[in-house]
Length: 89
Image 1 (spheres, rainbow, N blue to C red):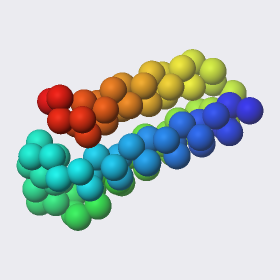
Image 2: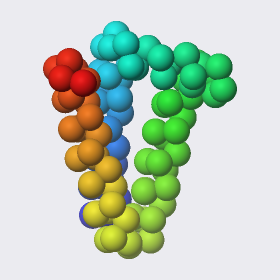
Image 3: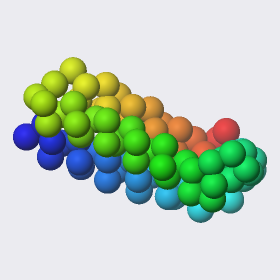
Image 4: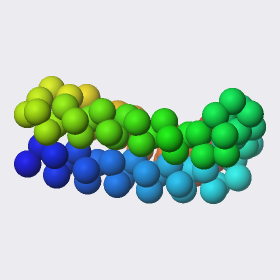
């Protein structure tokens, strides 16, 4: 069950990430330059995948605490995505 929840939270994180990357917000465009220079064109997606992979590995071992942390991470991502997409930041 933990693994399914972590996977669904990961889907939500990737969807928010894609929406923010494609938003054209000036802050996002600046960070694209940084990630592109240091980590390649899709560097931020690799970072997001690494976080998801770690959360899923811990969830597979039965760790409920990591699921709480990943849920909090998803909530913070949702707030940040809302701020950037609504141009409040």
